[in-house]
Amino acid sequence: MDKAKVLETIQTERAQLDGLLAQLSAEQMCQTALENQWSIKDVLAHIATWERRCAGWIQAGLHGERPDKPEKGYTWEEIDKLNQKTYLENR
Image (cartoon, rainbow, N blue to C red):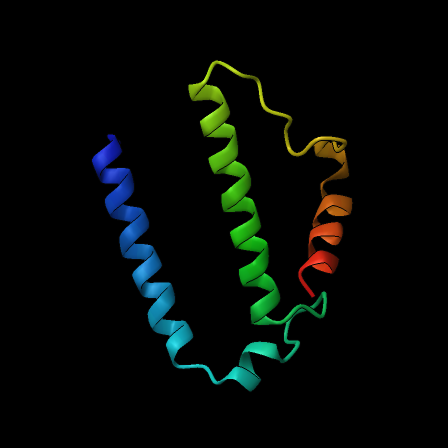
């Protein structure tokens, strides 16, 4: 898959997500609905945080740097701990 196709896919999928979210009220966005008691709003904050992390990794790589993955001070084995930290920061 080339860069243009990746970008097209991202835009298409994001438009679908936006369409689904537009159907929800503010109250629905804040209701806890998942097993872990996260709301739709919490899930969106989680996705946005991981998108920023990924963009940072790409940016660092483009500058010849080696980014901290998944994040400085965390290992992949501590991913649940990192996700919990992110969740609490975005509440």
